[in-house]
Length: 141
Image (cartoon, rainbow, N blue to C red):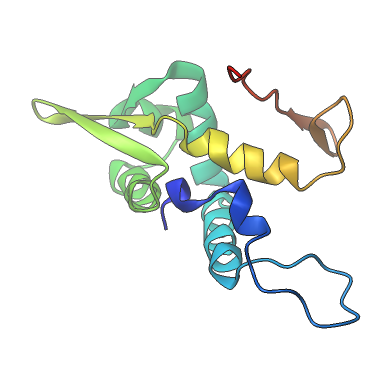
């Protein structure tokens, strides 16, 4: 389940929905992949890892263990799931592994999530006391 497989076109390339259906057509594979991705990120520990890695760009497994207050095997298990999903990548330096977010993977996920929202000047989602906002990068014409 690599997020690099997600494109905006996948949302509209599916066969037409049954007559009378109000939902726009979507590809079943895209829905399955997004479900797996959101399940992966719905775990509090994995979401915290993702947020720590967005702040620090790259972290050693031990640093993540200290910040999360969890054992090395537990944190490594979460990182392995995220690596398999194509969200993070490891860099080995001697006996130590350093993790970083794969370039573009988190951005593609945010683009898909925010593109599904009604378009206005503000691209944000509010969760009680937390607001997630996204500013798309300016692309050359």
